Length: 428
Image: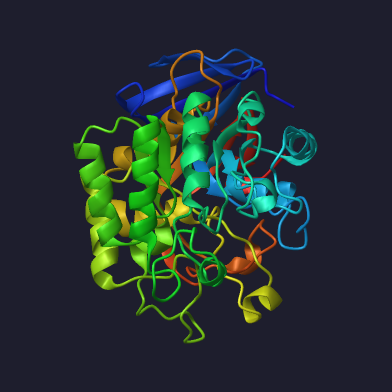
């Protein structure tokens, strides 16, 4: 139930969308920001949240999340994933379409959203597949998919679209329908095997996952020709950053990219508590690549920090599944390793994790302006805590930051005026 009136009192508000950075109160009524002003007086029926010595920011927006439902609920569900998101200060998620069956039609979008309405505790949008069944053979009905505003981008998730003619046409149709192409430019063994039997697919000889930059060059070319929108998922290589920089300098208006906390902070020399190199796609790269990602984040070349939240069971991991969960600790990891050392400001983090995703994917949020939905996170910037995967709301435990001592944590999350997390605990 939404509290009719909520007053966040005495917090330091950081809102890059409006330019506000200072102490003020925020008054919420009927699920929206009603007033932003100093010394607002509560009524008798107003719920007051004391944010003294805390920071109040727009709720985080993650544009790269796997919720696994439908089809893989043993890994994660809409309910557990969205609860994990709320704990981490996320109020909006944009999901990948690699469910079973994949989200490749309006019927599948409707089915998925029915589940969201029943089980989700945060705002949830989705991406839709570029090709039917994620098979890379035939395009989905992009024109139809674009009519549903809950579809915010197109992606075939873990594999690039192999056929040159197909990705070219997809970029054209996406541009015509004002949809973002959001590819995972990570050639896998599947794509390399397919290339062996067909000379018309995109193929660059070598090992899997070493041609990210080549695929990004291709996607930039076809997006530029179509005058469309491109958002590159989980950039991991210094060379990829360079071609994105060149594209932006050429004046391509609609190109953006994201990085993950694990690629920002871990490299190929990292070992987990068991002494193993944890597996993710793209893989953890060199120290030089990691440092280039951090520099590009601070200079503004990188637009977004996204988690690529990818839940797996322990058995999945033993069988070779790749990926990490990150919703519950991403902000705290960034605060500890990048904000407290002075590499990024809190304002820059809010831009990368809320304001920019809202702008790029055209979702409502990323701002605390009067009239906006009251999607808000409150942070204790000095709270010390230790990551313990056994306490996660997520079903999964595959987190490379398990056991890390962090400084900075979300204490309150509000979605549409409803308090979802209070004192660090789910209350809905």
